[in-house]
Structure formats: C-alpha cells, structure tokens
Length: 147
Image (cartoon, rainbow, N blue to C red; front, side):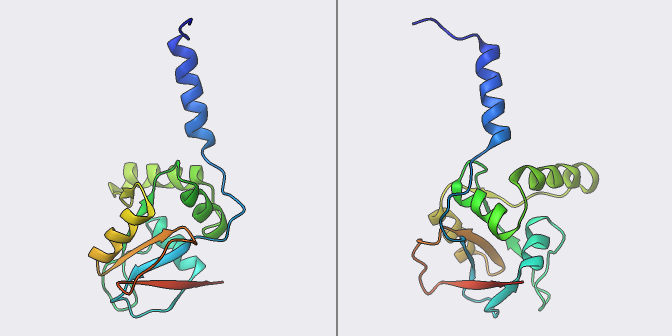
C-alpha cells in the first residue's frame, strides 16, 4: 500500500480539527452542577459568560469551576451550538485571546460524561454538561437553562 505524503495527512488533520464534530439532532445536553449548589436554574447568558471566562463567581461569591468536554465530542458540539449558541471555533478563539492578553486558563477538558460528572461531583463550584441520556445521581443537580 503506498504511503500518503505527510503534508496531505497533516492537511487532513487540520481540516478535522477546524471543521470539528457536528451536533446531532438529539436534545440539548444537561447542564450539571455539584449537589451543594443552591440554584435550580441558570440564565443562558450566565452559561455563556461562565464558559467564555467572563463570570468566575456564583451569586453567593463562591468560585465557579467549569469543565468542558473534548472539542471532538458530539456533546461538546451540541452544548456549544444549542446551549451557548456559539461555534466551538469561536469559543476557542475567545480563549486564545484571553490566554494571550490575560494569562487565564480555559476550563479543563474531560474525555467523557462520566469524567465530567466526577469532576463536578468533586468540586463544590463545579459546572459542566453531559449528554441528555446520561444518568445523574443525587450527588449532582441538573440545572434548567432559561433565556
């Protein structure tokens, strides 16, 4: 079998990274927080501010600890497009600017719904998202997203 030139393979990889996954027609992902969080709902604008690094404290003054999923995850694509109403690329561009200008750090990235749930469970100010079908136990709370 002939080998592909490295340049072609790198170009294909760049296309995959730039194009990214498409959100499926499934329901919006669930937004989850640590069970210690007092809220039951969250404004969509607040979610955007949290995941864009503009809001870092809950209304009670406690630190917010957001967590993301991989940019290749269909759940991340659905969350970005359906909940935040932004493309993954625009969110990444925002974080690149913030890292450069403000020396801030984007949310950590976890590989699966279970990893996100474990992170949120372990952090009292944690907030993340999981697939709509992911089973949430009593150590987590699902927030209703309101406009």
